[in-house]
Amino acid sequence: MTRRKFERLGTIIEDVIPQRDMRIRQASLADLPQIIALGRELLSDEDRPGDFHTEAFWRLRVTDPDCCLLVADRNDKVIGYLAGRVLAPKAHLAAELGLLESVVVGGAYHHLGLGRSLVQRGVAWFGDKGVATVRTSVGAVNDKARIFFKKLGFTPQIVQYTLDLPTA
Image (tube, rainbow, N blue to C red; front, side, top):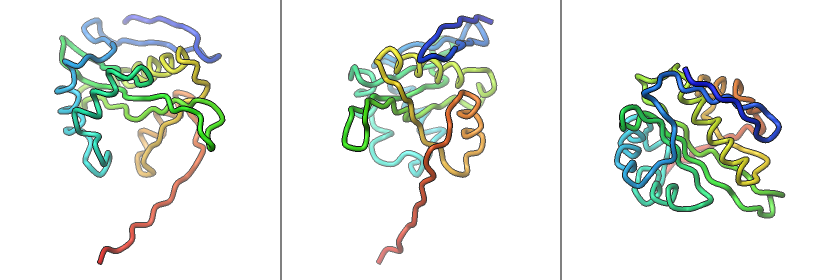
């Protein structure tokens, strides 16, 4: 097991790669087909509406300097990813905000520390960009994800309620 500790935003972030044949790295355009396939396998369209499953969405995450796309791979097979982006200050944002859009790890690779490593690398990336706050959203029924992010130091801020109106 490889361990490195480094400090970002005043907290210690521990990068854990459970097995030597797994690594976390910046995604490349060549990774996009595997990323899209993994997302389609694990996330329904209801989980990620809009253009989330399109190559254009993912291409931007690789090419835009305000976007982060990390992959966990094993022997050049993408087994997980993290997508995020920096949001510029607006009327409701006093400073830049890091938005963690998605963290996905293939089912066979759960509980090996890859999700934790992806998030910690993503947080470090946001820190390098000068972002002071990182935000993500989790479905209200996704207890595992809520516990996961709490263990990583995230705190709940807003509870959002939705009402679907009947269609005519």
